[in-house]
Image (cartoon, rainbow, N blue to C red; front, side, top):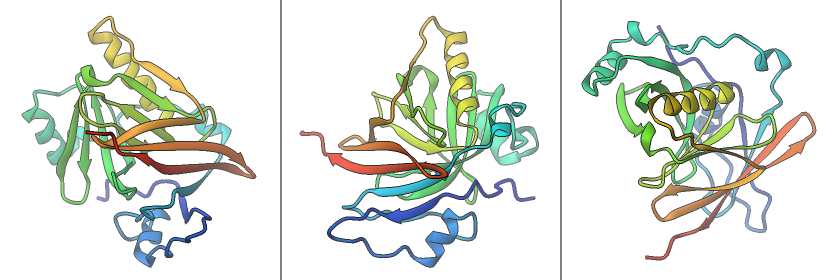
Length: 225
């Protein structure tokens, strides 16, 4: 059974700049469109323009069931969670995760009452675990796009895309509040920065476009050592 069905189509085009970026490889374009391939390469100097359709009204009000993967029936996921002593799954679904270089990687996001897990669905490997106690802030736009950033000051931040963005943010907030008196900030802005790596800062900017939302991701600067 293929537990990683394709995400909604996300079109990726090079930013219109003086020095145009080379066209995307066929395999990368197919991956962005939900076909074969694992990631989409971004131009290193230019930003990305990602056109994401406005979600239908029915998508906003659809029922939320939390586990969309079926974690108890997946030996790999249950083994990963048991090793960490986690067994209460609050949310599980497919997402796109953006790397330091701007590539999009398919991941399974699992949220428990103590941590976030990012699992490679092809290799069945845990790529990252983020303790909920380390989450300082969540960044989202004011528009109907699928992007959100998890800000982790003690490590590095994580930019992802999901059609269930609102549910993910709500689950993280409720999970943190249930374990402590602390409530992380939810920053809603059409422009925000995040650390793609310890010394790599990127800016995400959103703007309304005909039939959807355009999202531009640009490299800002490296933090001085």
